[in-house]
Image (cartoon, rainbow, N blue to C red; front, side, top):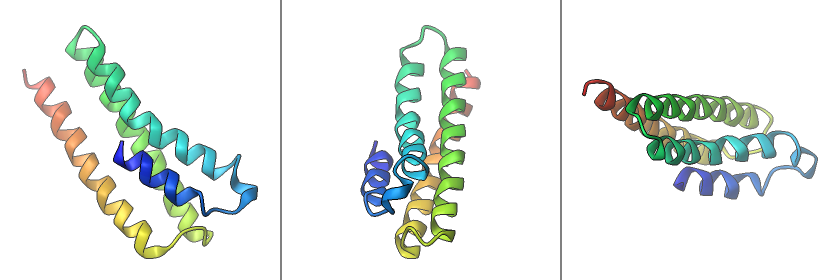
Length: 105
């Protein structure tokens, strides 16, 4: 959820004409990550939970692409972006470890 908050804060400074483009897409991806984890955890089988973890990993990858595009377009600060990418890499590792732990049961 921290990632979603940080993405919302960052995208507030994007150009108004990106409101329905990158801003909407980035926010949707950022919210999708914890939402999929919550939904997967509420499912009745480990296999379903693992599937939703995979969805979260996909949203994280999408968000990384959109963040890099935003940096290329000059919509965000390089230092802030790098900090966010480092944070996202940690999240990627946590998701991977959770998936492995569940599949090794």
